[in-house]
Length: 433
Image (cartoon, rainbow, N blue to C red):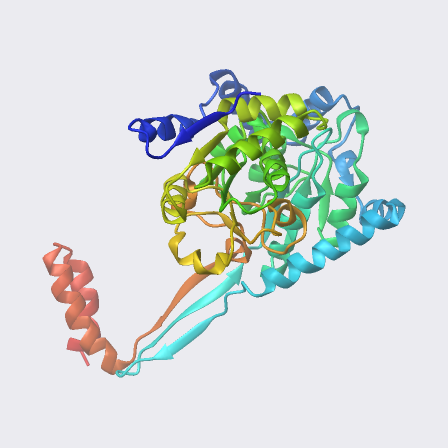
C-alpha cells in the first residue's frame, strides 16, 4: 500500500496539505433532478406518491400508508429477540449517552435591571422531530441512540423515526435501539421520499419541525432542499480522523485507529502527525501488515492511498497548529499528559485524550455525541446535542421607568435609520406618561 508521506519542513508542504484536504461535496445533477421531482410529488400526492416510491425502490407491496408504520409492540419484540450481549451493550451505551446529554440541558432564566425591566430567555423543546436511519446493509443502531436520546432529553414531544426496509428486511438492533431510546413512531420508509414525507406531511406521516440523521446522496440532497421549511442537523461529508502521536504509542494501535475511519468508505480521511520519523515508519509497517487481516481491506486501501497521509512535524506545538488548520471531525491526542495540550486545540469535532482513548469508543458508548462536523466545518460548528432540539425565545417586559429610558434611546436610533414609526412607537410610551 502506498500512503502519502510529508514533512512540514518541505517548502511545498502547504500546497501538499491543501491538496490533501481538498474535498468538494459536489452535487450530482442527476441526483438533484431526481430528488426535486420526488419531493414535489410527495408534496402534491402525499401517501399515494410515498407508497409508489417506497414499493419501487424497496421492492415492497404496500397498499396503504399505514402499512409502513411499526407499532411499539414491534419495537419491543425486536428488543426481546436480541442476543443478551447485544441488548446489554445497547442499554449500557444508551445510559451513558443519556447521562452525558442531560448535562447539556439549557434552562430558562430572567433578571430585572435597575429600571425595573424584566429581561430573560425562555427555553422550549421542539414539538416534533424526524430521525432518518439508514436501512439495508447500512444499519446503524448507534445512530438511533445518538440522535434520539438528545431529542428526548431536550423534551421533544414526538420523535418520528423513518428507516427503509429493502425487501421487507428489518434490522432488530435498529428497532431495539428505537425502543430503548423511546422513539414514539416508526415508519419503514427511506430515501428522498421519506424526507419529503417528514417535511410536508402525508395522510399517514406527520410533518416535523426538524430532520436529523445520516443518509445516502439522495437523502443528503433532499435535506439540503427542504432546509428552511424544516430544520436539519447538517449535511455531513466523509468521516475523518487526525491522530497526533508523540511516538510512544503502540504503532499497531495507531494503525488500527487510522483503519477505523478508512473502513467507512473510500472518501474517508485518516491522517497521522508525529515528530518521530522512525515511529511513522513503524506505523507504515503496521498498516501494511494489518491490512491483510481486514475484511474491508479494499475500501481501507483506497481511502488511505487517496486521502490518507503520514506527516512528520517539528514538534507537538506544530502538530497542534496543523490540527487547527485541518479542523478534523475526530482528533486523537495519543500523547503523554494530553490535558496540557487541550488549550492549543481550537478546531475539532471531538477530542480523544490519551493513548487508551480510541475514537471507536466515541462512536458507540463513551457518552458524547458521534454526530460531528466534517470537512473543516469544526471551525464554526459543534457536535449534535440537546441544544439542537431546544429553542430560545427572548423575554422583555419593560417597566414604566424603563420605557422612558429605553424609549429615548430607541427613538434616536430609529430616526437615525429613517424609521419614523419605530421612533414614534417608542416615544408614545414615555411622552404620554
